[in-house]
Length: 183
Image (cartoon, rainbow, N blue to C red):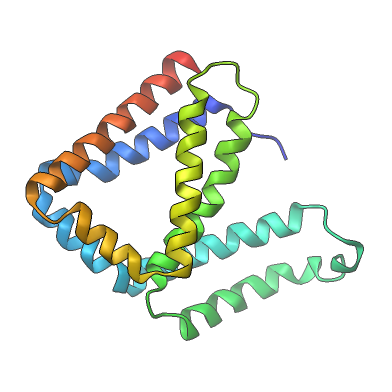
């Protein structure tokens, strides 16, 4: 598999940071309500779980694994939808933060692949971001109730919500600038 250019990764991450954090800056009460409702939301949990499992299935299909796994490879296209349905039925409690944690774990791989051999010292920003996401992903998958505590902490007051949103928005703008100018 070919890795993405670091400029694309930085531009994509910057755009996501800007889009997600604009509401925190402009409408902190709405952002707080949405963020606190997220851990128990079923539809985002189902969608994120389906995305995670589809991405994981695609990785399993394309990775060279042990010889005894080759007989399962053709069946992955049928097994993944069944697994998605079973996860949505039997693990729907706090599925959204678990699935968000899984997405954070999956996204870190392409970021680290793209940043691995880049000569600019700015690539360390993306490496650190990826490892922070790995740690957060592990916590959200293993202890999803901590996601709600974290969301409560970062949105406790409108000022804290705006300040955090502004900081994350600034990080997004920095990533956009790095993607266009440096990488």
